[in-house]
Image 1 (cartoon, rainbow, N blue to C red):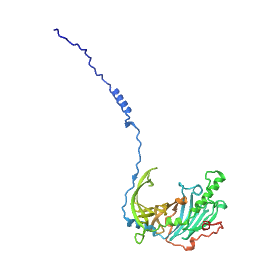
Image 2 (image 1 turned 30 degrees about the horizontal axis):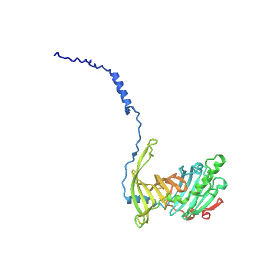
Image 3 (image 1 turned 45 degrees about the horizontal axis):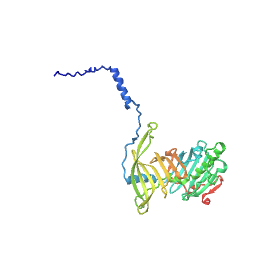
Image 4 (image 1 turned 90 degrees about the vertical axis):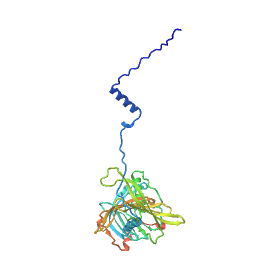
Length: 359
């Protein structure tokens, strides 16, 4: 039997072609781009807020000691710069018309205060206020004659917000010309009428804290807040992480229940310093928010280091104001005045409004 031979077609072997280095680089670059690799994306620097240091450690008695150091001040008497601040709950008027002013403030325990607000440079009186601890008086001198008034009331009373026309009219802040000017004056009257003198006593003279013989409960927690970097060498827009102790003052109301009276914020950076006090009412609403800054030696002897800038916010009264002592070394510390210095007289013959009779 003859042999059978299977003849299979032979394939030519593939010959590898040489690839030039330039072509290889091009192919690799294209592959990287198509794969979405981020090697060639533009990098953006993200500024991460840095924590301020060093942080001091303190226990509850040390915190109380710092609060009561400020609470030991009995009286302050000095010239101030007053700035009405823009904020989310301020209407047109006082912020726009009297953004900054000069003045003098006298505060004296237990609850006495005299405040003069006047226009810068010319010294024109804008408002004058006082309280003897039980009653308060406020005189508004500027604006049309119908907006000038002398207001009196009781410190412990709660009043509706006082408008210039006595009917609760809201200012038409969006108008132009004469209507806008009238709206600004009405808003200014309303804001200054809400600016009770006793609020300054509470802000400038901190009430003491007592751990013994009191029904109050105190609790401490630490917190870290992201804030603008206000240091002199800070870059524009820089932010930092600021460490605080928050001391809560609580009042028991029933079994297992309590309400917040005050929150004390104590700055921990470098040294222990009272930086903020927040006060609340029975419903838990924020009534007063006071921020203390720029500690300076006060008085001729400089023995007391006190905050030279106080920012007072009253959310329920719709105003925020900043008080800055012009020359802390010239402030008279613990030099009391007679009681009649805190009873304002209506020497200008302004129309009088007794808020107790309007209730």
